[in-house]
Amino acid sequence: MKSIHYENLTIRPAETADAGQLVTWWNDGSIMAHAGFPHGLGTTEEKVIAGLGNGLMVIQEGDRLIGECNYREVEAGVAEIGIKICEPDCQNRGVGRKILSLLIRRLFRIGYGKIVLDTKLANTRAQHVYESLGFRKVRTNPAPRQDPSGQVQGSIDYELEEKDFVSYLRNGS
Image (cartoon, rainbow, N blue to C red; front, side, top):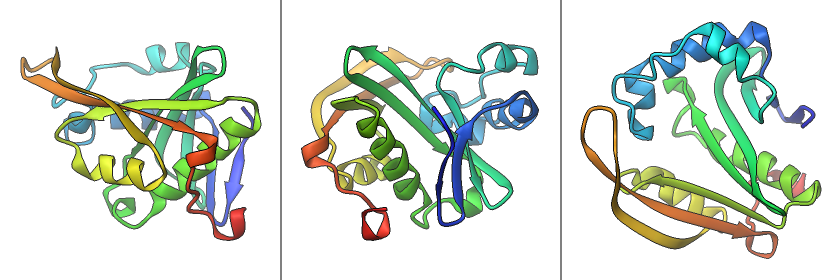
């Protein structure tokens, strides 16, 4: 996927030069706890670089990296997405809704008919954001998986069709 720009935000494919920042975020338990990794991933730059080109994208505000997102085709016409705004000073100010709006709009434009994602049952902040964009809950999984620290984490599966999408971009940009 090509870079996407809106106001001072950019989503672009992750590059080798981004690997160090991604490793820093992914190994930070305070950033990764919401995804079920309270001690981080324990990954390396080599592993991150090896995974580049598989739908992994970075999020920039101006020239600063502030997070990452990804997508992958799970079946014909269906994309699964994920997002993390990793810099604390960029959270809780609407950046995530804009980034999701950009990514979702692009995925619909390139031919996906449905977008799916999941989030931890305890992550009510993310649930609110997803539902405000038009995602609907399709399943609650009370305790389907165990995180690396041994805690059982429930999750919610969401899906979004284009007809239900609520963009947070001004003027439908």
